[in-house]
Length: 341
Image (cartoon, rainbow, N blue to C red; front, side):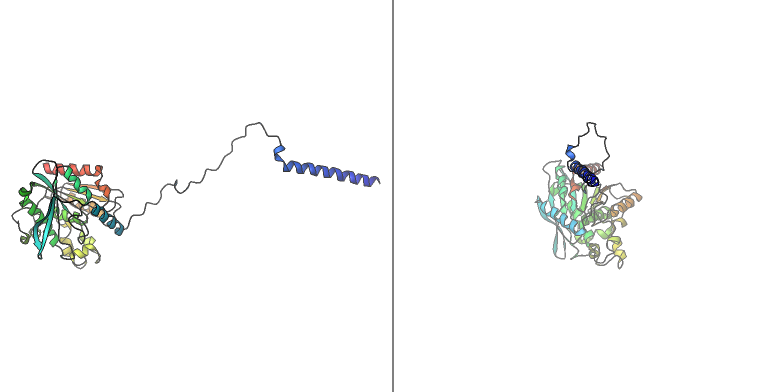
């Protein structure tokens, strides 16, 4: 009997202990909180999101087709009506060779002239499609002339080189009629137009680029300075691909006709008496490599020709930022200097 009572007594005590324990575990809020200030604990820094991570991979460059399409859109929306339209400076295969003139609203008369050649890979566009920042020359009191040339689907090199020199000679011969200063000519061009500006700057004294066919052969095509944007200067490299625009200009690749490619390369004609050059190019250009600009600078320096090279980080082919005030300030200073020499 006593053993049974002892068993039930122990059972009741165990039940009581278990019940109290369960209540304490299920009700933590009943446990008194410490009034002491908790010690600081180390926490893991949040993982940065993708927007806060440093850029380790450079932004992808736009492909050549995209850069050219964007450039064409920029030129088309920026076109202006010239003051003097379709002035004929020559004829090629019964087709007139024309130029336009834009006159400034201010400045000293007769007006110094900036002569432009349009780009387009020698097979596209026309004299109305100029880089929009060229019109800023008008605000500086300079006239702006745009000379057209026969595209490569109708004529092969060196016809374009002969024509741009002829256009400069015609402008000089007729400068008085249009209020232009024949002693102050600077040429400018972008891409293929920059190549042709370089050709004028280096071949004005060469008979092969001053054909009697276009007339005014008693007049010089020499200019005071040359400004180029993203231009190919060495066509022995550009024309190595038989499908390239440079090969189309020549009518063959540089591997098949290396002599002709050399005769189309501005780097081939540099001499110590050439006018000063101002060369601009962008590292983001996927159409024409900025190595052309660097090579041209080296070639000019080796002949002791005055040259300024501006390489702009990330600028694409035809990048409208070329016309920003900081970039144009250097251009205006260059033109002012060469016109005063």
